[in-house]
Length: 121
Image (tube, rainbow, N blue to C red):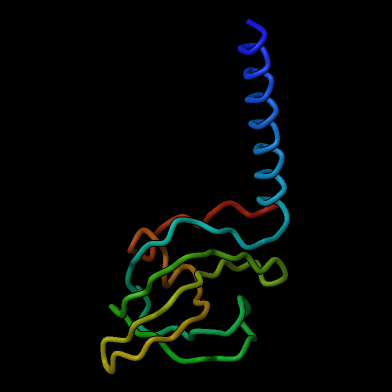
C-alpha cells in the first residue's frame, strides 16, 4: 500500500512538471511548432524569406502548386501577419528553398480560405 501511494505521488508530480514545462514552452515565443506536414502553395507567387517578416531577405520565389513541407508557424506581432516555415520544392526546376512564406499562401488546409491560428498573447 505504501508503494502504491508513492507511485501515485510520483505520477502526479511528473504530470504537473510536464504541464508547467509545456505551458512555458507555448508562451516563450511567438513561433509555434506543429507536426510536420505537406501542402502546396495556393498563391500565384510568394516570396520565400529568411526570417518571418515582410522585410526579411528574399531567398527565392515559390509559385502556385509548388510543394512545401512545413514544420512551424510564426506570428510577427508588429506586422500582424502569420508565416509558415518550411522547405519549398519548385516544380519548374526542382530547386529546394528553406524559409518563411506568408501563411495564407501556404497553409496546412491546402486552400487560401483557411482560418489563421489564434494570435499568441
